[in-house]
Image 1 (cartoon, rainbow, N blue to C red):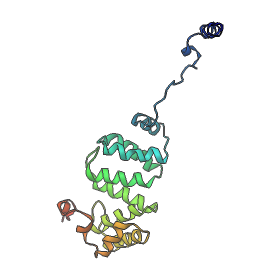
Image 2 (image 1 turned 90 degrees about the vertical axis):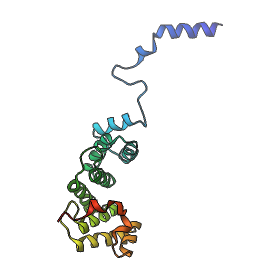
Image 3 (image 1 turned 180 degrees about the horizontal axis):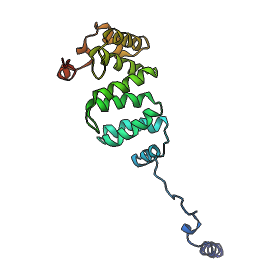
Image 4 (image 1 turned 45 degrees about the vertical axis):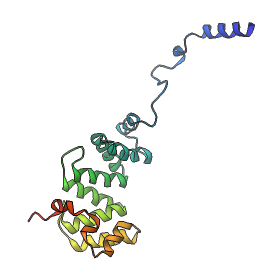
Length: 179
């Protein structure tokens, strides 16, 4: 009983727990939440896990948040975020469709050495989608991605560069030449 009385007295003497917390601190900060990820992004904190969270955010249909995250990560040099920005621009997710911006993101990823960026940039060049048409350069980019082991590039190359192998025919209207 004496131990209990000492404990109660010591607890009461120290005051409420909240008075012991330093001002401006967060008692229980969010971790592994969209809010936390976006807080990190808005503070300019990028890392692989934060940037990869954009995938889940966009798959949840929160395209404006995903676009905000991917853009910060892409500008920080994460090539996976560059290819996601391309996908978002090309499909009008979180903003109006913009094939020129999509092609630019693919080109940036390709120039940074990303095989998916090379593959996508090569396809854009072959089609003239969002960029000037240059079939020879496009094939070289795709061949490079295939040599680096990117399976879709290998399949596309081995098909004789048949677009139906990599793009559903339902999308042919989207990639048809405008002139």
